[in-house]
Amino acid sequence: MTRRTATLRRTTRETDVHCTLGLDGLGDATVDTGVPFLDHLLTALARHGGLDLQLRCAGDLHVDDHHSVEDCAIVLGQCVDAALGDRAGIRRFGHAYAPLDEALVRAVVDLSGRPFAVVDLPWRREAIGGLSLENVPHALATFATHARLCLHLDALRGDNDHHRAEAAFKALAVALRQAWARGGDGVPSTKGTL
Image (cartoon, rainbow, N blue to C red; front, side, top):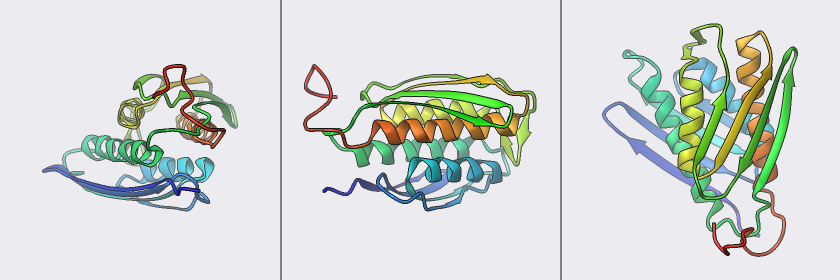
């Protein structure tokens, strides 16, 4: 069985991001982005997605968190895309609901190779743990673009922004794990390619 892993580094004038990813892992994560709440969300993604993830980012946090959040999403998405390879043998589709106390979030993914994202996560606060919440939908859409997947992510209810954000990453993790699970031979498309 081929191991689905990838290691990538992205270095710009704003950030230096290094990521090693294994899709068929145990959920072990070492995440240090310099943005504590982003670390928390990515650790939840790894744990509930069964990803082995090592991600480090040194970014221009003296400006704000935007570049670090965006570049982490780019590199993580590129690692997922690289680890999936030609996507042969995957189930392709996944969906999940994740509750966290009063919050409930739905995630639906298609590892189609066609990037698209609809993210509906309304916020009441501006930031949590150094993470500007306006960057969360942007990061998720950026991840979808670079992972070449279609993502629909909706907060169905919830009053607490921490709960909604964490439930979003947990739902996404479970949906991704379902979608990239090995489920047969060939590429799951009538076109014969993804």
